[in-house]
Image (cartoon, rainbow, N blue to C red):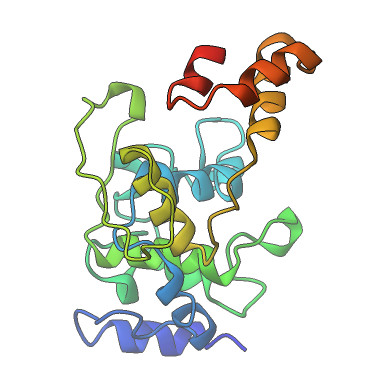
Length: 222
């Protein structure tokens, strides 16, 4: 059962909260599975867009309470009823989070009549984003690409061919998934041939590929 909104606001008013304080236990339990760093564009914005923009998005005619979450200015502006939706570093005093975890049907957001809801992991993502400073980002297309160092892969049983594999495996680990078994040469040829031509490989193409033991065999086929 989610804690009452009154308790959350009382706890939040005591000061800066540590990780997960003041949040329902089921939300806190989702924290270990979250990425180390919450990215607004990758993790937070898709949730807000899907669950909140209907009433608090770019449509002036549909917007409720003169509050919008699709702009940085709107998301961090003072609310008509007092306080702020998001207070960087302070999820306990962030009114948006208080409404997300409320068990009051007259106060919870999204409202029941919208037929939308947030699960515990999604609330945890937003809460952790606020804890980490609630960094807002412009649309990814306006951001200058930055080179990232490939994350380390702790499990030596994983097959790593290049740096891209490191990022994929890191994501798999965060989601509790494991790497799939490497496909056989015949399966690889079938996949890439179907992808590129829409047809399966011929017997001759298969025989030629299987007979080529060089490291560049797959590259030559592509």
